[in-house]
Length: 312
Image 1 (cartoon, rainbow, N blue to C red):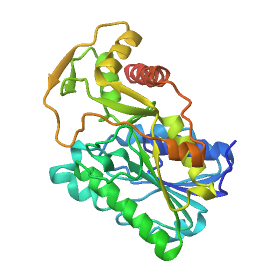
Image 2: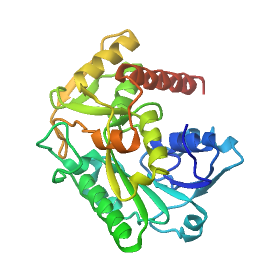
Image 3: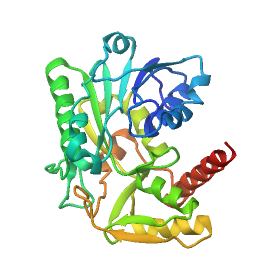
Image 4: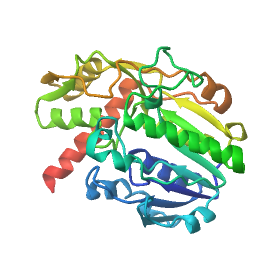
């Protein structure tokens, strides 16, 4: 049972994690103001599908808005909690021409402010599992901007007493994943019987975290008094290689997975693993979803989407 804020503002509400969080908050009884700008990361139609359930609630208000350009003060003033998930996503895309987009989003601190940070702040971490108190050395522009945003949260907390919380998310997966994310690309390619492009040798590992477990962490961080001013790792405890994930997807599909191994991309790291002792001890965070089950749910969601596309 989660304690619910009376009114929550969710930025990036039509995205992968944001849409799941929005639905969970509505189910908890909150009024939710959702903001999303429908940038060109992926199709508007897909993002609107993510919101189909939420838009059936009278307590949900959707506002299309670019945070870098729009005025949010009136919306922020209505909310007990701000969940800031809106961002320019992805490590690989943060190089080159799109870098400016990673720097645009304004900070939105007011009352309780829960920020979606990333394990990318650690870069090529020397300690695995990695605790929150290691020196962060990002290995991509994306990681640099996430760490900078964390520092802004701390500044607002220390100077103005804003109740900020930062959650460092580790490789989130599950239904509604963005089309550019690995498991989504793999699922789509398998269903289309296309060759899958794998960066590196496929033996790199990630601490994969199911989206439902991430949502639970956000809900707790929004109300637990111990979370104020803190930074937490949110990881699933599943250090799985890309090759092992592909083997599972092949089993779900009942076919061989065709692969093409290509060069490692700039900004990628060989391994991630979260030390979640702090989030477990202070927030009671314990991931509930086994990796194989979570990946099966994502594959079945992709399969359903492919069927809808064919019928349409």
